[in-house]
Length: 162
Ligand code: FES
Image (cartoon, rainbow, N blue to C red; front, side, top):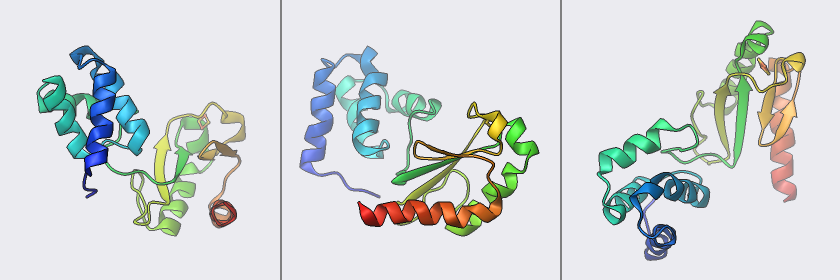
C-alpha cells in the first residue's frame, strides 16, 4: 500500500478546494485525483469523503462504478487486448493468454514492478485488423501469440532509451 505524505494530502485538499468543496463535484474531484496518481488510493477516498461530507460508501460506489477510475495502482504501460467478436474469432484469447504468461499476471492485473497492466476490452474500432492490441496509444494489428515477445521487447526498449 502506498502511504500518503503531507504534501500528497495537501495536493488532494487543493483539488477539493478547487471545486469549492461542492458535493456535486465528486466525479470531477475523483477524476483529478485519478489523473494525479494514476489511480485512487484508498486514503484519497477517505479524504474526499471527509472534506466533501459525502458518505465513504457513496464515494467508493462512484469510484468503483466508472471504468475511468481505478482502485489499484496501474502500470506505466497499459496493454489493452481486444476480446470483441471480430478479434475473438481470430484468436485474441490466445494473444491474451500468451501476454498473461509472458508477464506473469492475469487480465486486470499489474506487474509488481508497475511496468505493465493488462486490460481486456470490447472492440477498439479496428475490426478489419483483428486481432488488435494497444500498448499505451499504439495499435498492434493482426496479433498472434508469437508476436507478444517482440512487442514487449519493443516497449521495454523504448523505456531504456527514455
Ligand atoms: S472486435 Fe476487436 S477491434 Fe473490433
